[in-house]
Image (cartoon, rainbow, N blue to C red; front, top):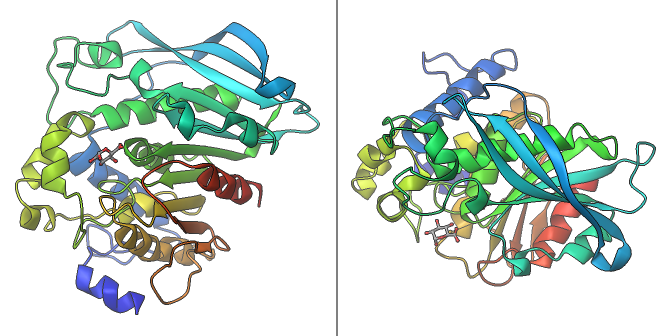
Amino acid sequence: MLNELLEKRALPPLLVSADGTPTTAETWEKRRRELLSTLEEYEYGRMPRSVGPTTWSEKHRERTAGGVAVSTVYDITFPTPDGESFTFPVTLSVPDGASAENPVPAFVYISFGFPWYYPMEEILDQNVAVAEFVMNSVAFDGDDKWGTLLSAHLFPDGKRAPDATGKIGMWAFAASRVLDLLLSLDCVDKTRVGVVGHSRLGKTALWAGANDERFTHVFSNDSGCSGAAITRGKVGETFPRIASVFPYWFSEKMQEISTDVETSERTPFDQHFLLAAAAPRKLYVASATEDEWADPVSEYLACRAASPAWELLGEPGFLAPDRLPEGGDCFADGKVGYHLRIGTHFLSRKDWNRYIEFIKK
Ligand code: GCU
């Protein structure tokens, strides 16, 4: 059944190189680079490049979550291409008992700053650490004419080249700078370091995880259009709509392929490229039954369409039955996990609990 549904979507082939040769396990890394470069070219823009090492300084430390954890606020600083540097805050919360002898899994949580998406006590109680940073402290989520925060350093003259990064790429780049910090800490289990985000920040988590292979786990919560959902045949939000309402999330060039739905469905890529770029690491996609704007069916089909990348490498990809998901379903036995939560567009404790289970597996 799923193969038939996917055939109707007529997706561009995942495992055939631009020069027409079929991808093998040996040529996978080359193909992965191609996938990333196609997504950069048409959708998110070129990822910012590191021009020097990340540094950090501790600003504040306190016991949190009723005394079961310690939260530390760091200022993270990295050099920028204009010869200056950029600094943003991150709050790292580590459960008591985490140490070099007893390292814990950790999430880089790209956040809106809304407390209702972050049931901190419940998360920390499960013995995982979370490093939260807020999107608006890195790149303003709106049309700032590229004049504020990180944008001002990347585009000092206020002009953005057509293939340059949008805000999603800037947030994703910042997630990697937070990862620089996490990887320096003895109390973090380096084999279990995930990136997680909801909605626009779920798109961002996917883009961060696709680019930075040091993330061992990638979590997309209700990311929908230009996130986990296949674009061809998608219901709810479309490329023309997202590109016109949120042009600053993407490259300038995305406008060219988003003039109308037909054009956006004739591109040489679809979102299964984004999911597959996480292979052979672990990927998890979550949807919610009432989130039609994101389109749970298209998110689910994308997992299926991306799975051959894992299979090519001899890994179990997406292990799910040959049917569409029902509310409450969770398929997380392979390296690609998925669940369909009953409810609306939200990052809930149920989502977090599944992510924690998956990262601990
Ligand atoms: C809008 C947008 C979505 C996005 C969402 C969010 O609804 O259309 O693409 O995911 O905002 O980030 O909350």
